[in-house]
Image 1 (cartoon, helix red, strand yellow):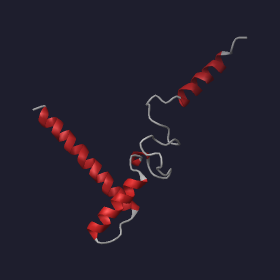
Image 2 (tube, helix red, strand yellow):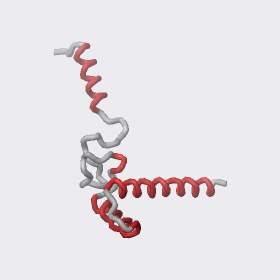
Image 3 (tube, rainbow, N blue to C red):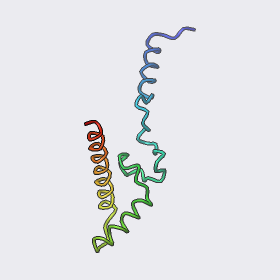
Image 4 (cartoon, rainbow, N blue to C red):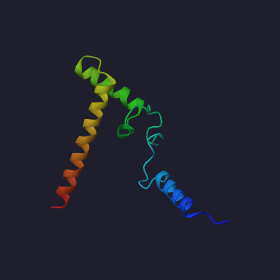
Length: 97
């Protein structure tokens, strides 16, 4: 029995919607780099493990002289990541001159 054109179009639409053309993990799945990342944390910070966050809190709490919160530690890590990206970009530009 042949499928009707409408059914065929609906199946194609469903396939396109469920397929992930970017290769990125879906929002409901956890990335491989930090499997213990809490689901409430943004995927852009999935690389930050609980251990890294705790270590960052310890180091910077000692440096600042007061106990910093998770949000502050996460901001520090994101800023260090951005700095690293800028330095790598600058290095690539210097190499191309």
